[in-house]
Image (cartoon, rainbow, N blue to C red; front, side, top):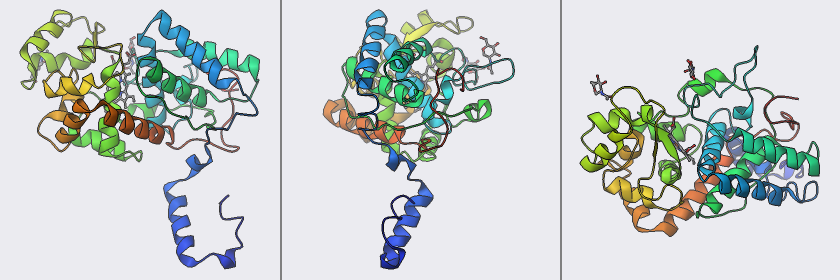
Length: 326
Ligand code: HEM
Ligand SMILES: *[C@@H]1O[C@H](CO)[C@@H](O)[C@H](O)[C@H]1NC(C)=O
Ligand SMILES: *[C@@H]1O[C@H](CO)[C@@H](O)[C@H](O)[C@H]1NC(C)=O
């Protein structure tokens, strides 16, 4: 709409109108995001976020992984709108206790601290959804991965949806390859984006309950790797015991995740399906051999993920604190 109002209707050729209508139908609200969104209203934003992520990672490297995952789980449920940051209350059940998140999402304290510093510098201006997006970028960068410019201008939701977060839009670790592809397609991401974004599992940890069946029951797994993981993940009990998603360099954002997959050392079932004789094998092999290609495709896919159905303009609000609506 914004981009048609400048041109008098009678001058617009029909084909252009059709194209614009098509774009509107598939959603162009992300077109309103821009890297310079806060450059006048909060010039220190990027440095405040960066130093907050830096000091959190200095205390605990894993927090970078946790922040990256928070952004993913935010964007896949009704778009990148900060909904995952809303705490449950006596009368409201948000997304944090939905099965994909329960007992595993973390990083809220870091977001809280950064938001409070941002509010001091520029009160009421910067959304929690944008802060979360920036922390994901900074985490990847600080842990040795690529960097990129983040488009900003998302606004915060006034609510969150336990049922949407529980509905399977965030695929479970038991997913087949086709389910993974379908779930990413459903939010406008390609199979290639899915394979590249899964490379996020080059950092961070997973709980025993998410990979137990794989290390005891699956045959496409390296035997010594399975035994290693069984040591801290018993057949029963120890559900919350942790293991690194990347067996070799879990604190470094590199392409080792894909090398693991070539060696049947994917930790999750949903990791190993990316290289198990299916349509994505060749891409996994390519990323395992070429870190630059992985970085490029990861950045492209992160930007696309950050574009999923943002609230813009007068939609939603700018929360004062990220854990509750104003
Ligand atoms: C392709 C589908 C995906 C599945 C099935 C999946 C599944 C999982 C599971 C089960 C865990 C462990 C959670 C737990 O311990 O309960 C995990 C952790 C993680 N995931 Fe994914 N994930 C997927 C895609 C992604 C994407 C797209 C990103 C980010 C771009 C991502 C980033 C992470 C990170 C960084 C961790 C470690 C978090 C931490 O240590 O706190 N994942 N994922
Ligand atoms: C979330 O985990 C708690 C234990 O911390 C458990 O009691 C609860 O049933 C879980 N909720 C869901 C929806 O799985
Ligand atoms: C292995 O598979 C069997 C049959 O599906 C199942 O009953 C059992 O719980 C699985 N074992 C583990 C450790 O997940």
